[in-house]
Length: 107
Image (cartoon, rainbow, N blue to C red):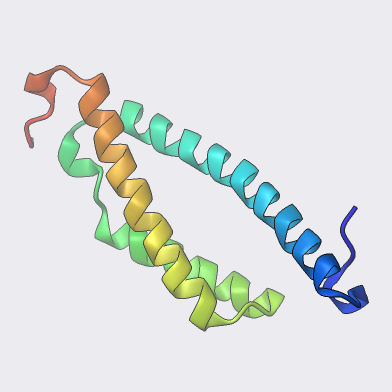
């Protein structure tokens, strides 16, 4: 088990901690990606994939949580905006791959 950041005395310990966190982040991102697959399956049309209002809602919630937990907004906001951007692109791909061509037209 990796040491907590304040307990690290060497760069090896720091790197072990970072690697452990990265593995956990990948595990969580796989679950998040699953929700993108569900959204692509559930949304009624391709126009519903991109939702600017929802993007801002997600970012606002993340920034609130980041502030509460001590994560820099300078890290949180750009990371989540990029994550959302890539998740939307993935959702478009899944939507297109799983729907007949006539369902891909905007409503």
